[in-house]
Structures are given as structure tokens and as C-alpha cells.
Image (cartoon, rainbow, N blue to C red; front, top):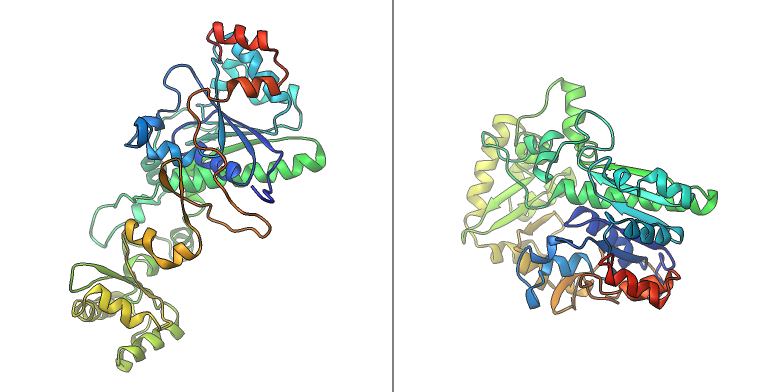
Length: 388
């Protein structure tokens, strides 16, 4: 990778499924040497979650690219010793065990810090390393429900709607982890001291649930589901069905966009109704619904294409993948026999590439251990004992 900003950074990744692997995917795409460490049992069962070439899921292939693979039995004393030797030259360890599991294995933060004081150790869990719910199991739906986010998703009068984007896993487990890791890594490079990065997915979701949080403090109550300005309470910020059963995202929220929107439609009489709420918003919403139902999505898309007022079509994923804008930005790449997303950021002096396809279990064990100073005979003995 030309100019990769994390070139030379080594990551030992003990995570599986979605949050941790996506966090380390971001690091790997930026040039870090990510070693994906799996056990000898199921390993990362993302491999079998969904279809893909040769029986390996597209899911696994996409979130584990640019990583190397090592199988390691951490329950064996020899496996633990191998891991500790790898830690000596590592910059980052990422795990997603329940609190206390890594300590029982002898690879907790205190154990590893004694070997490598500059190590950044990131632990990703649902509810954090401490607190009454620290040991509770959970999934994304539980985290967003517990944090008050799910309560706000949906239409007025309806039940909470399950989002298709795993908000807790990705915003919390992946992006928050990556942010914490990079902050701790930066400090370790100047201070020589690493840190424990305690990431709780429920907390990451909680602190980004901003507008209901503000409302509780200003009005004393949480807005009704679908009733806040940005969740359906403002007719000028909503989704409207078109004549062909498709939808348009209509968001002329600011006054300047609303005025342009009204002028384009020849409805200057709507201008005073900007940011209407309550029954006034409901009446305006009915008029807007009737208007958008009079033309198909393609017609409305063409109509608003040259008008700067924040009205766009609601596309399906396959339509988004084909859109000329994403193509021009290089957001979809072909690798490992499947289409994959490119990283969500562009950095000057850096050209992203898929340098490695997602590893098979233990694919790079020999080269990784040789780099760590293990001899040919030692590696053979570890293989014979099913340690690697």
C-alpha cells in the first residue's frame, strides 16, 4: 500500500464475527500488520455465515482482508507462551472476550503489560469491563435497546423498528475501538506507555443518542417515537412514496433549502410553513405525500437533479453500488472473487489496495512464528502438538 499510514504497526487480533474484525479491518486497510488469531475449534464462524465462493462467506472475506492468519490454542501452556512471545513485538492486542476470560487464560492486560509496557490493549464488550451488567451477554439489538436508541426508531404510533445497520456493533465495537486504539497508540509512541482501551458498545451508542438526550434536559421528556424534528416530526424531513412504489428522501431542512424547494415546485405558498410541527406538520405532510405520489421515482430524481435543495432518491444497495458517484470515488473493488467496499476515507499520499485476501485458518502460521524467532524444529513441534 503506497504511503500506508499504519505501516510497521503490528496488531494481534483475537476477535471474531463483526465488531472486532471490522475495527481491525480499518487498521489493516491503513497498512497495519494484523494477525488474526483463531482457536482450533470453531475459529471465526463468520466464515460460514452466508454464502460465498468455495464455502467461505462473503461476510468473512470482506471484513478480514489484508490480515494474516494464525491458529493458536491458548488453553495449552505452549499456546500461551507462543502468544506472549508475539506480544513482545506487538503494538496492539484486540479481544472481545467477556470480562475476566483473558485473565484466566493468562493473557490479560496486566500479564501483557508486564512483558510489553508500550502495548495498547483493547477489550470490546457489550457493557464494559466493570459495572452491574459487565458479565451480561448481548447483541446489537440489546445494546441499542438498552441505550435508548431503539425506542426512538420508527414511525409515530408504531413499535420500535429494527435498523438494518448494526449501530452498536459498528459505531460502538468497530469505530469507537479504532478511535481509542489510535489515540492510545499515538500516546504510546511518545510516552512509551500503553493503555487499556475499555470499549462498551452500549456506551458508544448511548453517547451518540444526542437529540433525545438534549430534549430530556430542555423539555423534561423524550420525544415520541417519530415525533422529533429529525425522526418524522417535521414534514420537511421525511420519506415520501412515489407513483411506482419507490421513495424519495426529502430533506430541505434549513430555510434556504426549503425556499428553493418550494420555488422549484411552484408552491411559494408553502414557504411560511417551514419547520411546521404538530397538526400543521401533519397537514403539510399529507399535501407532500399527494404531490410525490403523482410521479415515479425516476421522474422526481430527474426533476431534482439540478436543484440544490436536498431531495434524493431512496436507493437499494445494488443501485447504490452501480451509482456513478460511488464508482467515481472508487468505493467498490473486486477482490477475493467478490465485490468489496473500499475504506470510507481518502488520505493524500496513500493508495488503498487489497494486498491480502482473507486468511484461511492458520494460513500464515509458519511465517509469523519464524518472524518471531521460532526455529524450524520449534514450529514443527508446535504443529505436532496441535498448538498451532
